[in-house]
Amino acid sequence: MVQTPYAPAVANVHAALQRIGARDAQVRAWLHVDDTGALTAARALDAGEPGPLHGICVGVKDVIAVAGMPLTHNSPLFSGFVPAEDAPCVATLRAAGAVILGKTDTTEFAAAGRNAASANPHDFARTPGGSSAGSAAAVADGHVPLALATQTGGSTIRPASFCGIHGFKPSWGLVSREGVKTYANSLDTVGWYARDLDLIDRVCEIYGFAPSTHVEGRTLRIGVFRTPWWDEMTPDGQAAFDGIAAAMTGAGIDVVEIATLPEFKHLNDDHRAILFREGAAAFLSLARARPDLLHPDFHLRVDALATYPDARLREAHDRAAAARVGFERAIAGLDAVLAPSAPGIAPLGRSPGEPRFNQPWTLLHAPVVNLPLAKGEGGMPIGVSLVAPRYDDRRLIGVACEVEARLTFIAK
Image 1 (cartoon, helix red, strand yellow):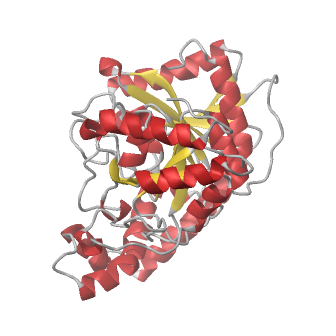
Image 2 (image 1 turned 60 degrees about the horizontal axis):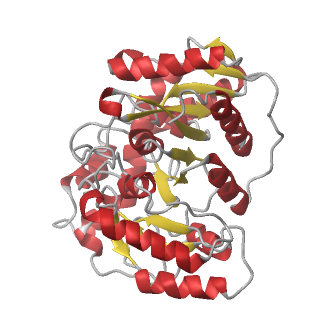
């Protein structure tokens, strides 16, 4: 299914509903589809002046408020809750002419507990990844061209890798998180999936990101960083990553090996300390008021004070702050850093997947884009991450576009 701006919104909604009707019984990307509301909104859009996203159908991860649609967080605690207002990240898309089609499945509270029921469209026995499972599956299976996600550890980038789509986690703080379930204040970031980088970039523009200089036609310098956890990659994950790095060299890209980055080996442990302590604050009220319906995973977070005392939290925040500055100094002169998006192909089952390769970038507040450039066992997708300094978001997307253009022979 192809949807472009200025195509009739009603036609796009009908196409999306048809695809969902044909496929979602197996993919299970959606918790709620508002067909009547979407068609009503589409007719109103087609009767007016088109906006920059006119007619684009959007799925919204079900930890983000959409007016008049259930907000369940995939939790029994929120059964029947319907917000009266859109989260600002949703309202901004509506104002640009997008049609909000419905709510996509998620790991409970985008954190832990219950897994999403969504399947990977490339193999229904495998996970699409979490926590943004339904959003990734909906874009990968052609239900919608755009879907909102969130990332606290690796919940936008890893599902993009597993599902073979473009995923973007912007710099922390650039997109409003009002109306989005809080997990860890220092980490939570609204991101999105799309079938192409042009739409990724247009959403950046709609959210008010600063424009960037062009990179077309000049020599790119890309750092290749295998991370301290390279040995935990699967064989096909390693082969895919090395193949992309080699292809970059063959395409005339200046590839620079990066052996280490400042404080990087500590960042997963520091991420976990911050995640659990800030998660304790986020779920404390539910643990006190509704303990019987709150999954044991969240009680563990509320009890995190004993495991991660104040001194450890202070150390984690201080080291992360130093690492942000150190990272950006270490990659000065590079256009981006190439790193793994996931250990390999999507695992069997419905687990969210291993976040180790994503968490450090989230803690560094860096923008990350997943490029679906390789395949592994059984033809399953394997993506790679391009990472840039904070607030260099649109330039990163420009670099990603140039990389994809030069690697057409291994593109999906």
